[in-house]
Image (cartoon, rainbow, N blue to C red; front, top):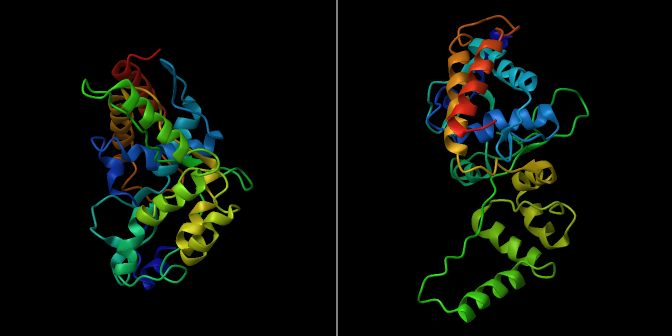
Length: 266
């Protein structure tokens, strides 16, 4: 109810300015991919050199954002959550924002709260996107085989079953970024830290269902292609007051053709 929203200073339901920025291809992980993973039960975009996105579920994902109509705020509002009275109800957020919220005097559980990914049906698993990072060792000409193998063995030791929890805790303490492991809530190594950081404790509940990005060397143009069609579709919905979204079929078809061409996909 817009009148009730207005009475508490809220003008929009959802804030995501990058939805209409296809050049910000990395943001498709957090908006399109998050919703698609949840709706599809964790299915991938690409397998090998084949586009395996489900077209109907892609349409549903487009139309989820379209259903927000004129309650979707796409104008950029810097530090929106640091405002005394933010003009929006919700967004897609990330752990690296926690420190700035704390510095802005925001209290978790009072001023903001992290919740699960949106699902199609009550009881569905809350699959979501994991911002996975890789580790690469470059063997230069001045690196001997012995030195290289020593580095490999050190990394194996650092991340073996016995040491990995402590290593991940030190990473978490330094970055506030949750390691992607399924025992964050149950492993006692993390108990004290998570109890002291309730924001991360709530987010940790969803890490077991987190899935990383596509392993494809043309990920950037593929996601730019999808984002271009998504942005074009949203241009038709941003002024709508109708709860039923506009049909996204045309835009999804365009996205599939563009992704195949951009990525050389079957």
